Image (tube, rainbow, N blue to C red; front, side, top):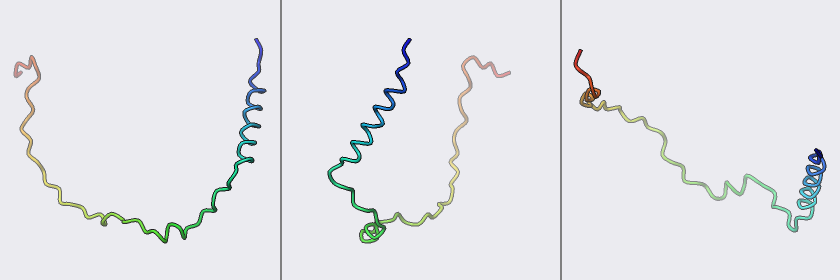
Length: 68
């Protein structure tokens, strides 16, 4: 049985690095000012609503329940 795993991983890594280094356009530098210029509409502040307890009817008995 031939163990060619190391060779394959090496080939994949080198082609991956070459693809990144030959990328035609460099991505623009990230800055926080871009986000500050366009403010996102924030949701309203959290206000807890009073919990109203709902009265549910009792569940039906299990099938075959004889009332013991």
